Amino acid sequence: HAHQFEDAAQQREASTLGMWACLVTEILFFGGLFTAYTLYRWSFPAAFALSSHHLDVMLGGVNTVVLICSSLTMALAVHAAQVARRRGLVGFLLLTMLLGGAFLGIKTVEYYHKYTEHLIPGASFHMAHEAGPGNVNPALDAVIAAGVPSVNPGVAEDLQRHAQIFFSLYFAMTGMHALHMIVGLGLLAWLLLAAQRGRFTPAYNSPVEIVGLYCHFVDIVWIFLFPLVYLIGRHA
Image (cartoon, rainbow, N blue to C red; front, top):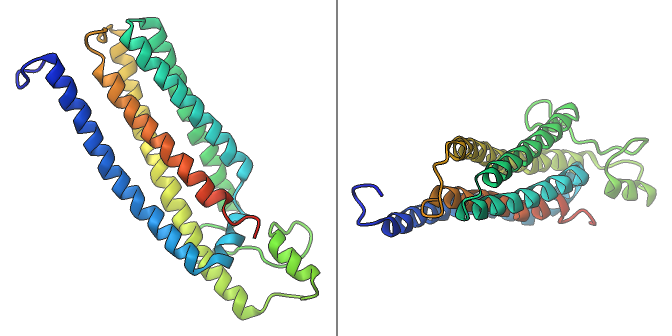
């Protein structure tokens, strides 16, 4: 143990407490983003419901499964470190990194789709709302089918403006989550190098547990983010 601690048990407790304190600050940070999203969704329900139809639920669902599997492999890595299974630890860390990379790859595909569909907030932003083949907005299709030939220009302008708020929050929330994923991959790479050198034993494996806490936190954030952004309001 380090010189500032009385024994290894005290060092382990201090390290774990430090990570929990860090996670509390992360909860406050993401909590602000979630609160902003909730308030704006309450203020502009129509625009947010229509905007959610432009998100790919299939890709978001696959990413959810990927993160759940990564939580499992990370938990197995922690167990392997505790029972001194070096090969198992290395293997599960590699699997966790591969799943994290797959998540970021799928998210990159989603971002590219938003770019090609002109859904990046800014001067070129335009959310399709007219009727016709290929219209991705079934809610407005229903309006057209009910006998309204086109959307009122003023209403359409408001929808476009409020939709930009939705996508601004979408990119802020998912982008910050992706940044945490990248940090997590860096931590996993460090653990992998240490594991290959045999640094972790049943008596010393707290770094694996602490990084595991971080990875589980990132996964839990997505479990809340996915239904909030992708699913709620799609039936409206």
